[in-house]
View (cartoon, rainbow over the protein chains, first blue to last red):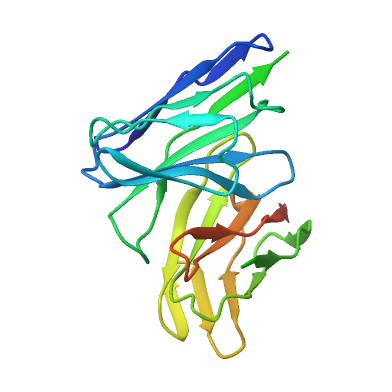
Length: 113
Length: 110
């Protein structure tokens, strides 16, 4: 089955620790995206990548980092510099370029205490 | 800042009725729009895409786009309790990012 997987589904960390969220897709999509969703809020773009070994900051990149070494994978690291990291993190992918649909993975719910 | 605006709701309709969800956008350069359905605690699921003015129908769903008025809508006919969810409107901005509204919560009462 083609799709996007994110792991883990739930993640708990102590304040001050870095944590990496996994995102893998087998849709052969060039573009991948990371969003953050807070209760009652829309999706906010953290980082995106249109092609391997290249990525751009979104609207709220501070305190996050990404890599894109393989077409299928786009991991997100939430660093200790992120002031309020508790949120629902969503990975998406699409055909490269504008106007194409984005498809979402199941999400990772991160809780930092 | 380019924006997509939605009424947060909740919008409550009886089972079998038509639910009408609306969205406006500020970026005149936007060409394509999407509706996603998000159940509580789940990720968004794409249900409709629309690229040109007019109506697009898919089963019980009809998306409508009016670029002159910068308005997008989603009609759900014969609403079912299983349609109860938050509906997100999104449009590609001229800056190259997909911009999401905050969503409208729909409740379909049996």
